[in-house]
Length: 358
Image 1 (cartoon, one colour):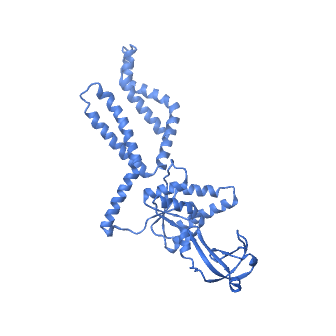
Image 2 (image 1 turned 45 degrees about the horizontal axis):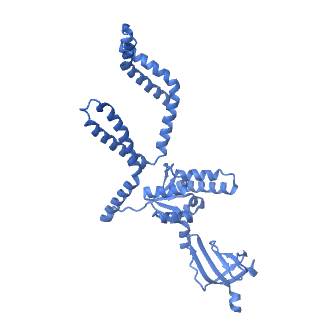
Image 3 (image 1 turned 30 degrees about the vertical axis):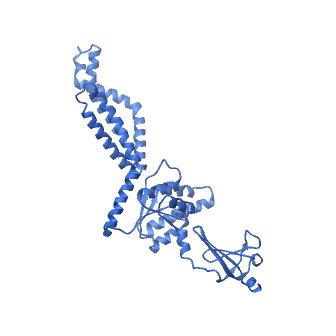
């Protein structure tokens, strides 16, 4: 269908140019005595035939260009297209105003308007495209100010942008099901591509993790009563998926949902709101205070000399000083300190029998 449309455009262009140019060509080669060649109908047909023959060579190149341009527009974020188009319109309008003032100059009024249109159109598009972030921030500030002035304009729920790690983790589905996340769940297309790449990996562990992530997404979309959107845009000038997530969150004012410690820090440094699933899990764990008594089973030795390692039911690691001799046994320990970070929680303890001995 596209090839036929392009061929029709070539025919129309050839016919139009034939009407205006072929009579001059006939006069130039001294064939104006042939009435048939001077006829505008014949000129239009000749021009159309010439351009139709050209299509056999050019239609493939033009079709590939149109498809490439279409794919670029589809992948580009809608904000880039809107602000670039607005800048282009302003540039063309400025070129028209300047060119209009040159109508009284016979030489300048033919060439200069074309040059001005090209230059100002390009500059307008580039300015609109590259200043989009500043314009979005300006609109966001005005909206925030309006909301602060009128509390009734506040609306619950914000975009929650999921990263690959939190999808593979799987706990996000349970959190959505309990209703702790409101607003719209946004899954970027570039995250889906990374997830599919992991699911197609030759490594069995990675492949299983990727397929688990796809199953989690299907569960969120089909079984959980929450709005889910797929963001089709991409940032081709950015290679890293984490950087694309931060960029998307900045442009949309959304919140990144992750359990990646490094991405969490990057979001904090760039002023992007972030929800860390590990922080939530740590927050709802039972509080363990120094001096409390726990009954645990030491399962392996630690990194340091004479250390033993145990785990609570929720996966929290317990480092037992002087606990290497108790590997494979259940013992009572006393908590000495608790280390809490975004990466998890670690409990340090010592055997109660050793405390009694002292």
